[in-house]
Image 1 (tube, rainbow, N blue to C red):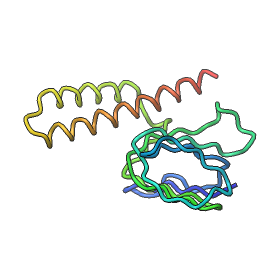
Image 2: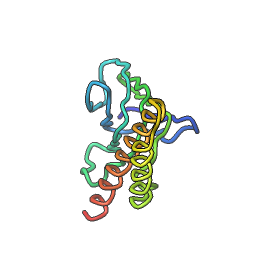
Image 3: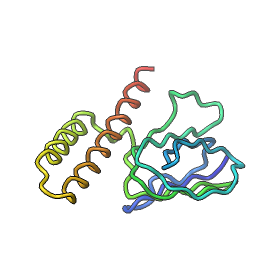
Length: 142
């Protein structure tokens, strides 16, 4: 087991022992297990998946929609520092779809590069939330 801390601007979202962490990085997705080589990398917006016990099947994975940040890995712990992390159980697909539509409209009506970049960031965030909502829905069906 290794210790996982998921820390956001609003506080600690996870602080527990886990067997595996699958995380999005700017270089691609990585899987982290106990004993992993030390590493510090950039977290990318995406889906963070947590397997608490070695024998847990994929249906028991916990999913989080995370924004970009930093991931610090050592053999005995992983610390993920991100602006936002929304648990899959807290995400509503309808709200995420509405947010995506608003962000796309914002992008289409943007008059400056700053507005376009903000809209693209919101689009990415909404797409990640929808992906996590989809994973949660599939998990509930299993």
